[in-house]
Length: 128
Image (cartoon, rainbow, N blue to C red; front, side, top):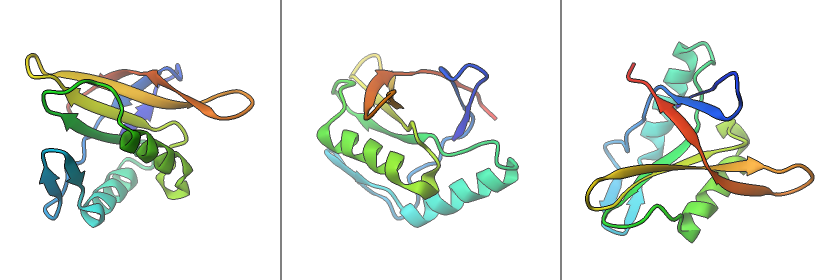
């Protein structure tokens, strides 16, 4: 969660919502506890007086690359198209690699005319 800075290319992450107690974790699959996440996101949004919003999703590719899978791309489109998410240009952050662990953030950006494109995003993360 966070906000877009004065320059639309600047994204500030202020909070990371965890998977939740009922999440499913497997090496090649993850399913979040959606009820937990929705409550946590709503609470942060209200507490921030609607300044801090949902930005997108994050996960890891242990020992893998920063490339988005087809499922990752589908998730980004689903977030973009879900009105309640209020994320028309969602992010997908991926922690990857065996050593060192690296973070790559992708952004599904609107294009003039039609469609969208994936671009690496510049993200600032603040501990709050």
